[in-house]
Amino acid sequence: MNRDQFLLGIDREMIVDLFAGGGGASTGIEMALGRHVDVAVDHDPEAVLLHQANHPQTVHYVSDVFEVEPRRVCQGRPVGLLWASPDCTYHSKARGGKPHRDRNRARRRRGLAGVVVRWAREVRPRVICLENVEEFQEWGPLLDDGTPCPERRGSSFRRWVAQLTGAGYAVDWRELRAYHYGTPTTRKRLYLVARCDGQPIRWPDPTHDDPSSALVRSRILRPWRTAAECIDWSIPCPSIFERARPLADNTRRRIAAGAMRYVINARHPYMHDRVAAFIARHFTGVVGADLRAPLTTVTTIDHHSLVTAHSNGKHAEAVRALVVKYYGTDGDCSLNEPLHTITTRDRFGLVAIHGAMHEIADIGMRMFQPRELYRAQGFPESYVIDRGADGSAITKTAQVRMCGNSVCPPVAEALVRANFAHERAWQRMKVAA
Image (cartoon, rainbow, N blue to C red):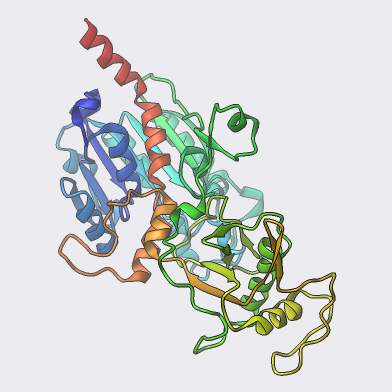
C-alpha cells in the first residue's frame, strides 16, 4: 500500500482490532488508511494464523479478549481506532428463536461487547467502531429457559450505550448493506461508531445500488456488483442425476422450483457460455437467487450452490420428471415409472432464449468454493485463505467458517474513511501552508 497517500494523525496512534478473526476488518482498515493494524486479538488460533499470513506487521494475541490488558498492550501510546466485532452467534435471528441450552454460556457470549467499555475507560480510543448483527440492538436479559425476556428486550444494549456515553463518547449506529459499498453480497449488519474527540460521527454515502434505481440510471451511483462476478466458471458442475449419493428430497424440490423460476419461466435467464444458471440456497423455504444480484449473506457453514441448466446431456427425461414432481400441476411422479403427460402449456424442461426454444437436457450443481465466497465478501484476490502464517493448511470447512464470520472489508473501509476524513483535510491544509 502507498503510505504517502494518507499521511494522517492516525499514523502516530495505535489501531486495535478486537475479535479480529481472519482479518476482514483489518483489511478494510488498511485499505482506508494505508497502514497496518498494530494489534489484533482473537481466541481462535487458526483464525490468528490466517490473520498473521495476511497482516504480518501486526502484533497478534491468541487470547480471550477480556484477558488482554489494554494498558499493558498500549504501553502509554494513544489509540486512534478500536474496531470490535463481538461474536454475533448468540444474538442472531439465524438461530430461529430457539432457547439457549446453556444460559450462563449464552449470557457470557452475549456480553462480549462489554470489553469495548473497558477499553474506552482504560485507554480512551479516539474512535471506536463495532460491527454485529442487527439483533444486537435487542440485547437484553435471558429468562430461566434461555430465551430473551420480551419485556426487557434491548435493555442491555441501552445500558451498554449509556456506559460509553458516560465515558465521554458520542455514539451512533446504523444498519448498512454491503452491496451499497461495492461488495457483491446483500449482507446487512449493524455498525456503531463512538468517538470522544469532538469530531462528528460520519456515515459513508452509498456508492452502488440496484441497477433499476433512479440514482443508478442517472449515474449518480454505480450498479451493484453481482454474484456472477465471484464464480469461477472453469470449475465443473456435475450432473445431479449422476451422484453417488442422491440429493435430499428438499434439495431436489428447491432445484426444481429454481429451474422454473430462474430458467424456464424467466424472460431473460442468466446465461454463461450458452448455459443457464442460478443460485440455490439450501435453507428451508428458500428457492434461490439470480446471479445478476449480489450473493445473499455468506454463513459460517455456507449453503450456496451454483445450479446450471444446459442443452448438452443425456438426462432430459429426468429433468422433466424432476420438474413435474416438485413443481408441476400433473401430480407426483416417481422417477421409476413412466413420465406423466406433459402439457404444451406447462412446457416443463423447455426454455425460450433469444426467441428460440431449447430443451434442458441436464442440470448440474456444485457448492460454492471458499475463494468464491471470499470474493463475495469483498476480500482482495491476493488474500491468502488456505494456509496460516506457519505454512499449515487451513481446511475448506475452516475457510468457509472464517469467511462467514468476517467483516466485509469494503464496508469497513468506507466507514473508516468517513470517520477519518477530517484528518486527510487537516493534512492537506498543513501541506498547503
